[in-house]
Structure formats: structure tokens, C-alpha cells
Amino acid sequence: MKIQSTMTGNKENFLAIHNNRINLFVCGPTVYDDSHIGHARTYIAFDVVARYLKYKGFSVFYLQNITDVDDKIIQRAAETNTSPRSLARKFEQRYLEDMQALGVTNVNYYARASEHIPEIIDQIVRLIELGFAYETETGVYFDESRFEDFGKLSHQSAEDLEKHRIEPDPSKRNPGDFSLWKKRQDGEQVTWDSPWGKGRPGWHIEDTAITETYFGAQYDIHGGAMDLIFPHHEAEIAQMEATSGKKPLVRYWMHTGFLNVMGEKMSKSLGNFTTIRDMLQRCDADSFRFFVLSSHYRSPIDFSLEAIEQSCSGLERIRQLVKIIDAQLETPGDSLESDEIDANVIEARAKFIEHMDNDFNTTYALRTVFELVRDVNRRINEKTISRRALNDVKELLREFGEILGVSFSVTEKGPTGTAEDQTGNLIELFIEIRQKLREKKDWQLADEIRNRLNELNVVLEDEKAGKGKYSIKKSCGVSK
RNA sequence: GCCAAGGUGGCGGAGCGGCUACGCAAAUGCCUGCAGAGCAUUACCACUCCGGUUCGAAUCCGGACCUUGGCUCCA
Image (tube, rainbow, N blue to C red; front, side):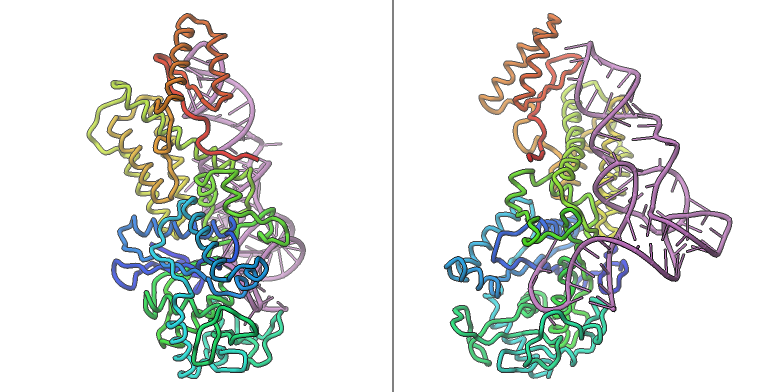
């Protein structure tokens, strides 16, 4: 398995530190507002990484932080007249709900910054003792000039980092020094006691305190979006490698590309900001996941409802095959008998794995799925596929769907083709009546019933013999 | 200014030295009572521009141009 590393810029062969165990850390949200679909892109990408690593047989500990101590939280709380703590809890809860709705279900533990203050303080104390940090009247800072590797992840030299857009705090030794501990300012409510008086942690230190607590000084994979490379991840490297003296902090740095809208980064000031909740009002989670996974995780993607619609249509095509297979399996004698494992199945699984092994190339993995769908459809038409193979294909699609976190089988998701309730019974009744009309060759009325049902989102699919199938229209979709 | 990611067919989006990516949309045919779904075929066969290397370049090298992002708030 190969993973592209931001550090080296190359695809590296993957080797876990502890045999079968993988420690994966991904930067979580600052919970001061609802998460947007850009966050969703990143978390879906790493959800699939975790799913695939598990599929490969690794034991994955996927850790994510929740930043619940932060300037923005304090500011927003003041604006909305709530306490920073209750604001943070509220948006943390909404974040977790959003992730659930998106099928992002593989994080093992969410670690709150506020619950790791002793570990944070401990790390800062060690940094001061080792001479990598110093105290001023405003706080404690990391001395960037003492850490010679500073800039190695973002490929910037010390001179490059001299430039700055925001005026640095004058008490700092170097403009690039970053805050480890912020001393309490007037009226601040959220503070903790520390050797430097009351205050709160800086932005970067929580992550290394958390990862050190659960993983130790070194771990396998650290993920996040591109914008975190500098300064955040650079700071993490500096803090932890300086503290422990062990290098590297992380073996594989993985960074996701942005989700853009009309070619621009999503931001509130541009008015192109869509929250996950708003998006899920308009389209289903599977279509969005499918859209995200259609591109490689590192590529920038451009969000539009049209693009989601295209993904939805593609997803429908795969689901259609599952329906066709179910219908085939219900009609005995329509396919060959064989005990052999079908070559198509073997090949598709091998290719899927090969592509996922290549830096989680979901684009190509999906191509493999589509190729399988095409081949199987053709062989069903030609009647050259065995029942065993049909069963195996169905199982394989379920397996692929599980890795990608997308359901390829709509039968798992509710009423499609089976009468489950009174509505289903009524639909069945219409279909039976219509079938009688068809037998009498009353095509006009039969077609009218089909059209009217279609308007009610019930799609009839006639077959040569029998009453045919029906399904609820479009298991995925977009409303504008 | 520095660093990074990009510019590919009607659209989305891979590939990164030679073989149709794939998907969506479209056209035609097969199938069907018709439709849908499916299959097959097609689309004067696309790669920002200019040089170069090569038997051969979207893919490598050089040089332009353009877009987006990061440079201490950012997924």
C-alpha cells in the first residue's frame, strides 16, 4: 500500500509502526458554528481511509480532537449571549449529528481540548525546560529559531517565514513564534490555572497533547485539509519533536484538497457557504459521498448541485444492477448453474484493492465498480452468468459499498419492490389491475396508470411476463 | 514576494511517455405493445500557450499565461 506524503511529496510505501495497529489522527472542528460541506469533504475522505485500513485487516485507532477552547468560541458566545462552554457543547453535538448523517462513523474517540489541560500544561512545561519555549507578559511562546526543522512540512525556509501579514505580538522573540499558552485577558471566563497564572492554551498545543496522550510521541498517519499544513501542522511537528526528541512525529502526512464553489474557496464573506445541514436538505448523503469520492482526496473539487446530480445518476446505475440481480435470482432457470467463483468477481475485487492501495484512489476504485456493472449487465442480457456469480457480485457490491460508506443496494434502505405497509399494498393493487389491462391489451389505460404512478414517484418497470417490478423513484436526488 | 495545488472532450473527472479511463448528458440501433432499465455503436476522437528532448508527450525538460489556496482565523 502506498500513501502520498505531504512531507516528501512522494508516494511512500506504507508501514505501520506497531505491526497491525494504526494510529490515525485527523484535526477535528472548532465548535463555534455548524460545519460546512468543505469540512464534510475532508471527514468523508478520512472516513474512507479508516474504512479501507480496517478492510485491509488493520486495527485502526482513529482519534479526532474537538477544539472547544478558542478565540472564536469566546467571541461567538459573547455575541449570542451564551457561555463559551454551552456554545461549544451545542455545536459539538450538531457536528456529531452531521457526521452521523454523512455516514462518517469510524472515529473511535473524540478528545476535547478542554479535557486535556493538564497534558497541555505538562507539554508546555517540558518545552520551557528544554529551552524551546519562553514566557512573556502575554503568554508562553514556542521559539521557532530553536527548532531547526521548522518549515519542513510546508517546504519553507526560515527566511520565507519572515514575511507575515498580521503584525506579530511585540513581546515575541521571532515573528514566527507561536502561542502555547495565552494569559488571561480582562474579563475572560474560560481559564485554567497554570504555572504562568490563569489562562488558556494556544491553538496548536492541544493536538500534540492529545496525540501524545493516546498515541505517544510518534504515530502513523495525521490527516487534515491543505490549509492546515501551515502553520498548524508545522507547529505540531515543532512542539512534539522538540518535546520528545523523536523524529518524525508522524510517518504519513495526508492532506485533502479544498472543496470550492465556482472555483473559489468556500467562505462566509463570499456568501458561498453551505452547511452540511443545508446541503442534506437538498440532496442525500450517499450522492454527496459519491461525488466526493469521484475525485481523488487531494484534488480540489468544485461543488454544485449539477455535479451532485451527475453523481446521483451514476449511483443509480449501480443500484439498478442490484435490483436486476435480485429479479434474476427470483426467477429460477434464467441463469446458469456453476460452483466456480466467477472471473469477473475475482478481477473486480483485485482491481478495487489495487486502486485503493494506490493512495486511496477512489476515482479508480469507482471506475472498477462501473466496469463490473457494465460487464455483469451485459452477461445478464446474454444469459452467460451463473446464479453463483450473481450472488457473488451482489455481495461484492455490498463489500465495496461498505468500504466507501455508500450503499449500493437500495433494498437496504426501505420500500423498493416489496409491499411493506398499506401504501405498498395499494401500489401492488394498482399494479395488479394494470396487469389485467395489459393482458387485455388496453395499452392506453395501462400507460396512464404507469404515468400517474410515476408522477407519484413510483416507477414501474415492466417485464415480458409477470407484473414486473416497481420502485420508489430515485433513491438519491437533488432538489433545487 | 515566498510556498503549494491546478489548467484535459458538451459536463464532472482520472491518467502523468506509446494502448477507448470511467461516469453524466446526447444520437442511432437491439430489446420492449409502448416507456423505463439494460446492452451495442457513435460523436470530424479532448488535454492553456510557445519552444525542446524522444521513433513517439496530455504525460519529461525549459519558458510564458491564467486560476485557486497558504504565508500565524481556517477542514
